Amino acid sequence: MPNAKIPLGIIGAEDDDASAPFASVWRNRFLWAGFVFAMVIGGLKGWNAFNPRIPDPSVVIKLGEYVTDPAWGGMFDASLVLSLFIISIAVFFELNVLLSIVVGYWACRLVYPAGYLADFKVNAGFPWRDEQTIGAYIGYALIVLVLSRRHFAEVLKGAWKGLPRAEGEVLSSRAAVALLAFCHVGVMAWARLAGAGSGSMLLMFAFLVMVGFVAAKIRAECGTPFGYFTPYNSMLFVTLCGGMAVFGTGGQLVSLILSGFLTVTVFYLIPGMQFEMVQIGKRMRLRPWDVAGTCLLGLFGGLFIGGWVFLSNAYSIGGDNVRFQWAFNGLNWFMNSYRAELNETTAAWLRGGGAEPAGGASAWGVGMMVYGGVATMALAILRQFFSGFWFHPVGFLLGATNLNEGANWGSLLVAWAIRYAVLKVGGATAVTKKLQPFFLGAFMGCVASIAMFTVVNAIAVSNGSTNFYSGIP
Image (tube, rainbow, N blue to C red; front, top):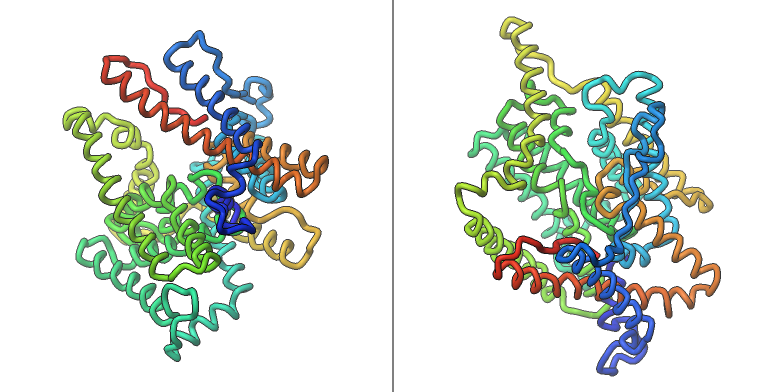
């Protein structure tokens, strides 16, 4: 659990002396060096927003300005951006995972020169990134189910026999299976009441559960440096399974709306975080219901605190202006896939004289979904049975997502280079005793600088300033 190393390090959960008042890492000079370094970087970036004469240490390199040959098809229309915040998280990941994500990103971008040379970029939907990601998630889920079939068989057997809850588990096998089944039944009932089409909603919900399963495994096994790592437009899965001709316009529209606020940004960080909490609870011998209660506190905090912040911001903007904000007016393009499918289905219906058109998506979209699934399964099998195969299938699975635009492949590459160099020069001890404490301090320094400029922004805006800093160090 790479992400969990940060909070565990802060509280000293793995220290030998549990009676010490503070974690041993707080006495490590490398932690404080990283903290000061991050505060300086964050301070300069924030100060530059108020005074452009202050040097900005940001690193942003647009590769497209250096590679202009059209034969590449726009493959290098990407930027190398370095973020200390992302680097301080990624440095806790395994070397092969970091390199796999970077290599997978550029491998997936090879479709751009291929589309230019083979002239298939003119087809609608090119480069079909979302379809490829959908297929990759499905393929990875299938291969994990196959490799973990004995564990799932034991869970189902325990649910059938009604075995009691195992030590350290929050729910018994029967309760867990019943809860999962109840959620699917509830979705079907809700869809029928809402007139959204129970078939499409059940299919969409099953897909969302599968995405959550894979997302939890990715975070627990590999780590997640950022959000935007799930299929960006999951409605396309329902389209690929028949679309409007099979599930109707209402089901497709609700699927698009669900996709817009569930699978686009950071929602699917939650399953992995909950899994981490359960495992940390077991390691620290916490009571299962205390762990469950903590998860519920997070849920209610998101609903009430997050809801209050959202409504407060909307009120400050005003009802006449809020519709022009990015979260509403700026996402009009997200409806394009729905409009395109509606137009195609209507045209097919008119050509058929009112007969029901055949359902389905474009051959290219289906092909990319199959390609993504097969390639991911092949990589997972190679890694499972060949110990020397270093490339992690997660690299390909995430390659077509927007994770590398958010966390940026440049930050991940730098994190890999730093950890690799320290490991080769100083060994594993240097990584655990020097490198990781330094970036643990850098992480805390980044958070502290964000908190500091939150206060600075509030004071500046309340005094009439139009300048504010909202970036990440």
